[in-house]
Structure formats: structure tokens, C-alpha cells
Amino acid sequence: MSDLGGMHDNAVNNTRITAPTPGLYEVLVQVYNNNASGTGTVLARINGSTNVTGSQSRGAGASGVGLPLTSTFPVVMAADDYLEIMVLHSTTSGLIDGGTGASSAVVTVKRLGPA
Image (tube, rainbow, N blue to C red):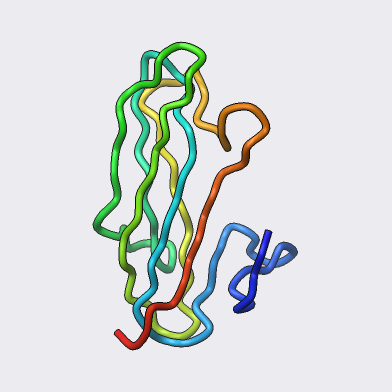
């Protein structure tokens, strides 16, 4: 894990990425749908209540083959706004996980400039 801007704290509110300065941020999220029967959705939520537009859904993966759920979208945040990534699945069985094999999920947030 890399956190050059001090946006994440593993001990306090570890589900959050917090904007240190206001601006336009680019968010990239990638996980895998390893379920042959269900669909998954990736979205972001600001301050626990506002869903970010630009979120995407992907269809079911083939059995044993991870289908990437990848979403990249812009987010305008004020200083101290926080972002949480939400991953939803349409069935109660199967996996949405960090990847195929030993890969891990990817979340990248970078400030592009003023909003």
C-alpha cells in the first residue's frame, strides 16, 4: 500500500479515504467477480451518504475466471470529505474479491487539481 498524501489511516476509520485539500480527484477501483451467476456493482460514496455518479456494473464471470469490475470516475471533494468504496453483489453466494490468484483489490485516488 502507498499513501503519499496521508489520505488513509489504517487504525482510525480504515474504510475511508479522506481528502486533505479541496479539488477534483480521480478514483480508480478494480475488484473481480468470481461468480458465474451474479452481477456486481462498484460505486463510491462521499461522507457516508452521497453516491458518486460514474459507478459501473459488470456481468457475471465465467466459473473460475474473474471478471474485472473496474470503474474510474471523477469526484469533487472539499477538504476533510471522505470517500468509501462500496461493492455490491446480486446473489448471496459466490465471490467478489481482491483478484484472481493472489492479486489484491486496487483503489487509487489522485488529486487532479482545483474543482
